[in-house]
Length: 414
Image (cartoon, rainbow, N blue to C red; front, side, top):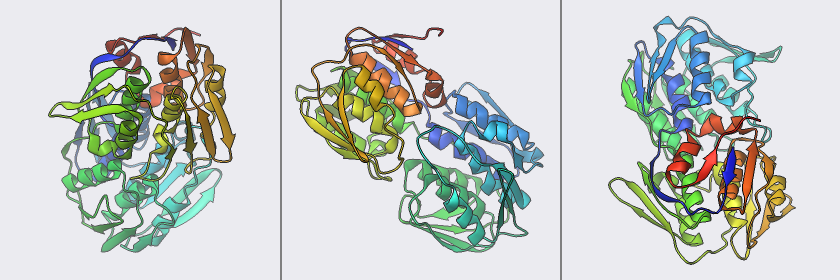
């Protein structure tokens, strides 16, 4: 991605559907006996990969524009192979529906961005509490259950993946399941909304206890996923870092939560209206400390973008990462552009500089890619962001949206 910096972003773009909401909803469609139509689906590499995973299980999954159809009536296979799962961690989501529908699941240990260890023990403990037997053989997780039964499950810590997976298994289990200390992210609330549209009995989503009453079967439905709050947050950070003024159709401040509050502290003016969110950068640029936490805390998926913003903010700010231990790999690349960042344990002390200089940089993961693009938008000269295949996993046509806002950005062959 080649970015020519120094242009103030202005204009209006649309926020598409959430990747992190779409993937579990796609998998949850396997729980139904009939097909589902999912609307607002972004065109992303991860969505394509998940569709391929569903097809290896015997289901049909096809996307036309922003609509995706999942037909689970051919579901017959219980194995998600290594060559697909290794590229995307979210493939582990198929375990819950496979256990619930077929009574068995064999899934390769997952892959994804190299941002640190992401153990799946909370998923497996939840399945075991529901009555499944878990074994690890030859790099695969094998789970079997004659019949899942409701249980009281307490998560050691909030986990979006484990909460979603156990929810999907529990909706067809016999009896009542209660999930204590679950994840409360908007994507979990959206998954619960989809499950209820299928006919599941779920309550308490978005709180510290989710209650599920198992049902005998579920039916397909028509559903629209929520807008992508991380894409919205990234574009708002782009407006702030360039001193711009942008409007985001379908943006929702409620889903942005603390990110919106931190942007306001920094000096970005935010107004929500019937169309979405309008944002304009004021004269004040204040350094703002953030600490990543499970929702409703500051999301780890916005940490890298925030660091890029703070790199050009006068004063000193501290960015603390509590979720993933390797999520500071973008620091060295920002330093290549002139950023002043000092790592202290799991915190980064950022001293704002007067300007950044364009440079060739390399993306290490999805959100680091976005952070380097943001830095390039504000830098003097040209920035080349290499290995942008990470970007295509989570952002739909990001360069097109930035171009519509006045940025000079394009793709180029290596």
